[in-house]
Image 1 (cartoon, protein in one colour):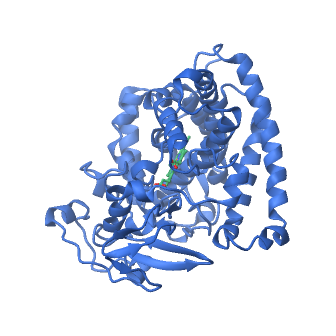
Image 2: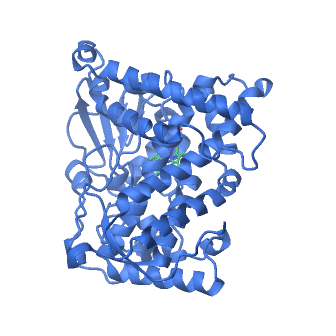
Image 3: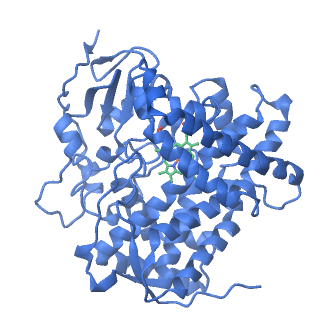
Length: 480
Ligand code: HEM
């Protein structure tokens, strides 16, 4: 029988690490300053908290994350019940908040094999290129002036997702995007209901539930109209949208174990936007911010992109993007230091189990601190330093098998949108680097750049990234 977890810090266990493994992650010009890993160092790799009425453990080490997301994944892949998600996501019938079970399994399989498969994501390349080039043209028209890159990149990722999700512009798309943002923001505020589940009076006095229900009704109306339009068009367009693929699957009743309803599809579409747009744009803005702060890295990235694109004479080709090894390393390093969901999405322990000698009762909420794993000094030398070269040997990936780098989670609940998200980030970053040099406004230098993160479930910049683009390569005019 393991020890009961208590409301106290648990001593970090010793880790046996291969010397060569350390070396892989180590920048050669190692500095003597120790890296600061506030959370894991202060609290150890497994910390027990009582959040309101809910017993919660926070996992802040790659070793324990591996136990929770690999060894005992079947036990820890449950999502806790969330009041807001229940209202917003049609009784939690989306992928992200559905309880583990046959329905969730089927939905995940459908989405991974169909709308979010690598083949399908590749088919959206023309959409990505068009939206990225629209952004490049906007920036070129504003060279020498301040550009709010945070805002513009967020618009671009929303436009790509909307076109991939719904097909060519359908009525109500802009309204839909702004409504999803409002819904997600409001649901984030409702976490307090989940940590005091017995205090139903909170629902009444806060006044938030009627607001959420109202927004949800609006969402239902807009998505309902979009779906009705899409049902008329199914089969007409060359590139099938995420929505039309799901509608086709819904109509194949016989092939499905659990029938898929229109409400289920409405819930899934919320995930595509809620989980898929701000995450990608956050990675792009942090990557550019880090490069502005580290001109050495920016210079090296410019050199790679301009050499590779320049020698080919074109920029929009997947095979060419594959050659951008340093840009890919920059993306990994950005995801290590700035995972868009620093605490991933909450999980719940389904049955009483034992992790690292501590007994974890069924129903305990589990939070995995991906941010701390990405800065663990036992795995990363000079963990605070932005040093993409540590990834150049290609050994470490973010696809869930290296638990020191889990910006997309790991195990059964790993993000199914990795290819979609990373394709957007790669194409956009490469273009921002190929066409423009970047300066801070008002003659500020890299030391003046604000790098603080905003408070909240996702790690956006606290202040928008405002930069001055300087044209380097001319952006081609669109072919009419
Ligand atoms: C850079 C971009 C992205 C990042 C960093 C990211 C990150 C994450 C993380 C951390 C999780 C939770 C994993 C866990 O609990 O272990 C997740 C889940 C999820 N993501 Fe992503 N995501 C990104 C893009 C996308 C995109 C583009 C889509 C869809 C279009 C998407 C759809 C989802 C869904 C549906 C889930 C829930 C999976 C489940 O619970 O089974 N994500 N994502």
